[in-house]
Image (tube, rainbow, N blue to C red; front, top):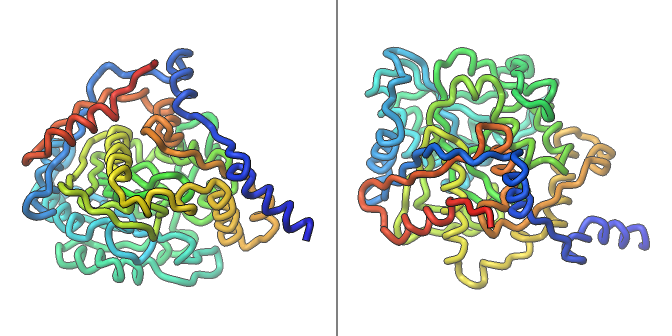
Length: 395
């Protein structure tokens, strides 16, 4: 009994003793010390209001965010959605948004448009000599598979090719993933990548936006390395976006925010529908995520009172325990799960508290200065508040 009690105290000590960290304060110090630079060059992020249909808003945002000059006739484009489970949008990417992007890419001259992902360990067990569960089945349940087929896209489920249908992709980072990441071979066949995440809370990382979506590419052994180092999971999330393939091929990031998974995540939680929905698009995944996180936090303040302080949404001890269980599932080893490094989940009061973004500022080209552009009548108060939330102040 004493051992059990001590184990509970150890797991939940951060909650019991209210141990906190302040990533925003650390970020200010990093800027002052020069380890994070603030880019004075403006980076465009487009907000398109969802007035009539989600398809119209997606096309409007995409065409405003990029001129598609990177796309040549008959080139192959890969769309990376989020299909971590079989749950419907916003637990996964909006099916109609994906269909709209397939159609738009075809109109712009694309040849093949491939849409693919590999689901999370809670729903798919993919090991070297054994697989149970199916991304295809989950994509069907979410409504994405039929949308892709109806729009003329090619669905792809990474585990179907087997363990050896992955390649080692080097990561441009001196500190993380020194042996690279195991990425699906299909990415070698494509010319461009369009990332289509959703706007969601995440029980481990805090949020699930564009940068977090990279995990969906990785083979199980890379996912194990990621979760086993829970103490730096947020930093590894950012570093994983510096794989050579993503740096070379990712062109556009676009997400729909007319429904938000505002608590818990990544698969379940309270779904909030803003008074005015928006689509967020940018050629920069970091700029996109800064605005998408601001949108998540903006709407979390508007939640019903009984949804704001859920234990599971805020508990650092629960996040730590869940991550160790994920390590156990990925490794099939109780010992590895128990001895894996402990994750620390901090509150996200502002976007500057997000360790994923804060690491991205260090490892990419600094902190972008966001220039918001609206299309189709985004509410001026929303636009002003989001602009305020993404404007960095050193004081």
